[in-house]
Amino acid sequence: IPLGVSAAVPGVSAGTIAIIEKCYDRIIGSIADIRKNFKQSFFSLLPFLLGYAVGGLAALLGIKWGYNAAPFAITGLFGGFILGSLPSVFVELKKGESVKEKISLFVPLLISFVIASALGVLSALFEIDFTSSLANHEWWIYPYVFLAGAIGAGSCLVPGVSGSMFLMVMGLYIPLLDISLGDHAFYKTGDWLSGIITLLLLLAGAIVGLVVASKGMKV
Image (tube, rainbow, N blue to C red; front, side, top):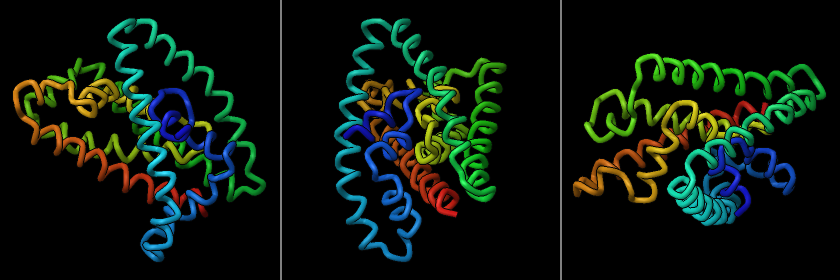
């Protein structure tokens, strides 16, 4: 459950929580070997997935309520979490005992940061409204959601890094929060299919991101 909560809150690292709970290596190994030993890996991950779903849903409901009640305070809180998590990123990067281990920690972080930051800057420069883009079914938003899912989920496996933070940088955290909780314009107009497609793309991207990141972290 703490893993789900940490993954949903920007600035809090699910990877760090997994290390604290001493389940990080088990999760990384199971995800990396999912294709070779599907049954064993699946049942190894199942308890974490169930707890992740419960914790994540509870956190998202709380965050949604907080945004409705005090949006500026919640945004400031997340900003504090993000800034406060930066030192832990550098601490984790120093933990690698060999150059190979340090590279396996640094490269996924660098790639995720560069891509998410570049996309975030571009969205700000072009003043893109992601909520409207999703509601208007603009073609580019769907691969963007897939990419966001891959970056966000993959980043969750890097200790000290917050996957939700990358979604916020990319401008999709609030729109995806609304879609996940059934509060997007899709549902208000009866367009449930678009909401489901968006969530499936996010999930598909997350699976790809988790598998790629797990293999990188296992090196």
